Image (cartoon, rainbow, N blue to C red):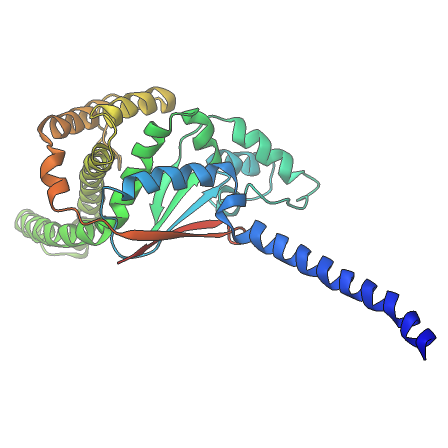
Length: 312
């Protein structure tokens, strides 16, 4: 009987060690994929910046996801190498730069990612309430977390202040007035024929595009102001985002003048608009009504998303 127990004892020890090993590996993998302590350095930079912004600014009561992707240079290389067709390479532009990828048509996608990262480009968007940045953005700002904060504040403004719906309402109201005016003018000057209807439609399309671009430029200037306001409230020097606009204009070779066919203002218009704002802005008035709140961060490596979650 004693021999029987003794023979089973080593097996139990081995089984226990095996269970503990698998448990440890499972927990290690879980924390790697979900803990903010083990996320890539770029996400840690975002967290530090947004923590500082949120400490003195109300960022609303909705979750705000942040995602870092490969960027437009990956898209360009994909087009050049025949991995995708022109205007159909969003997959490569949004590729997760922190994963290992299989070869595509014999091409090493991971090597493409590394090369794309080295092209200094600044890309930041607020898309469907997600703040999206290219990995190369962090390289281009080269440790200037204050300048990166301006870019993040700008995109947060689009989300927190619901720019899209406000812009959509403005467009609807203005376009209706301009459309009715155009239709009346065309019908007065030309006989009512099919050709006239086509002329009205062409003019309406032209008005629509110009108006959309105009409102988009207006929205960008408002987001510049709100982004600067967030950083000033958080304790950054007043001139920070004004200097950042010059920095990014030089890096990205912006046009000095505004093109009416562009969705973004030219450098001179953008600089003047922000300078006027920061000259007049007094953060003490804003901070009087600020109510501190708590938030938490949720990281998901598999989804490549870091989420800011306010708790109010």
